[in-house]
Length: 148
Image (cartoon, rainbow, N blue to C red):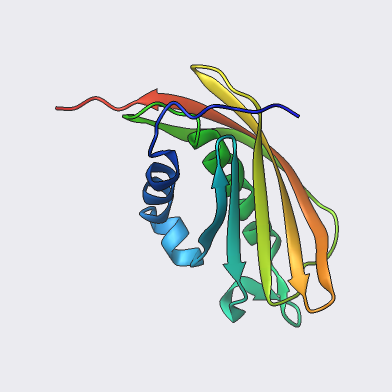
C-alpha cells in the first residue's frame, strides 16, 4: 500500500472548498467523509430527484460521484494554489444502487506534476450494509492557478 504525503498542509480544507463550491456538487448535495493524503470519501444522501425506476440511483449520479471522489483524492496531493480538472474517466456500473445513501471512495493510483490517475469505488448503503455498485478510473489534469 502506497502512502502519500500532502504538499499542502491544509489539503483537506482546500479540497472540500474547491469541490463543494462547484455548482454540480451543490446540485447533488453530497458531503465529504474521510479525507486523507491520496484518499477522499464522498457521501451522497438519498434524494428522489437523483433516482429512477422505483428509487434506484441513476447511473449518471454514480459516475459523477466516482469522478468527484477520484478527483478529490487527486486534489489532496496538490500544492497550494493548484487545482485539478477531469480529462477522462471510465465508469463501470456493477449493480443496481438503492439505499439510504451512496458512498464513493477515491484513491490515487499514480500522482505526477501534470496528470494524476485515481480509482474510485461507489457503494450503495442500506441497513444490511454496503454493496459495491460502481468502479471507475479517473484521470485529472493538474493546473496552477495564476493570480491576475
